[in-house]
Length: 79
Image (cartoon, rainbow, N blue to C red):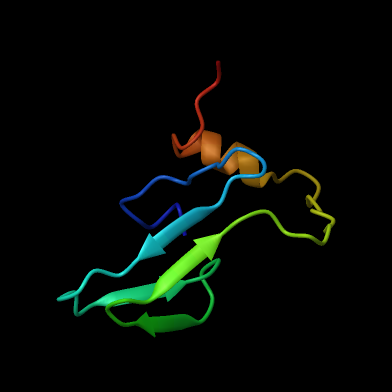
């Protein structure tokens, strides 16, 4: 969750893939997707994240916006 971690949210350019590999000797690597179930990773494990081939609808509750929360927390800066 970008609100609880030391790392800001990342926005990747369309069509790009981010790949992360757990180095040898690392003992505490955990993958958490969208704040849900955690998966213990082992040295040599590789995670790739990219654009989905399927579309989805992002619903926004009235009076609340995920992006406005990111702005309030300082993760997104107005240009």
